[in-house]
Length: 109
Image 1 (cartoon, rainbow, N blue to C red):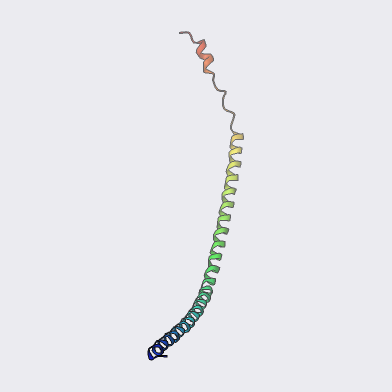
Image 2 (cartoon, helix red, strand yellow):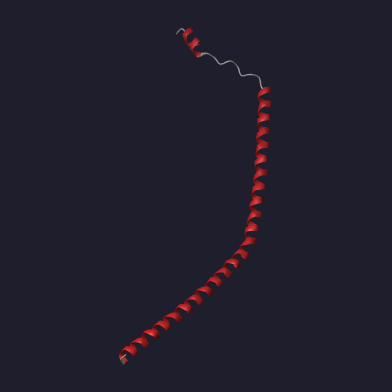
């Protein structure tokens, strides 16, 4: 082999070694990054859990309040309907409506 061939072969070997080192470094970096993402996701879950609990409590309070309000409204509606029926029963029936057509035909004028 000539010296040029040996030099080129050495350059190829060095480049291949350098690429292998870079790939190993990239693998290590990606692995560390994955761990950090897992840790961050766990921390996010721990931080979010109490917030979700408080939101559920607030939701329950709002729903209970709305149910109470709807019950109150339904009770008022029933009371007003009862008062309306009582008022209608106590009033005398309205006078019979006058039939104006019959009176017009009797008019002489």
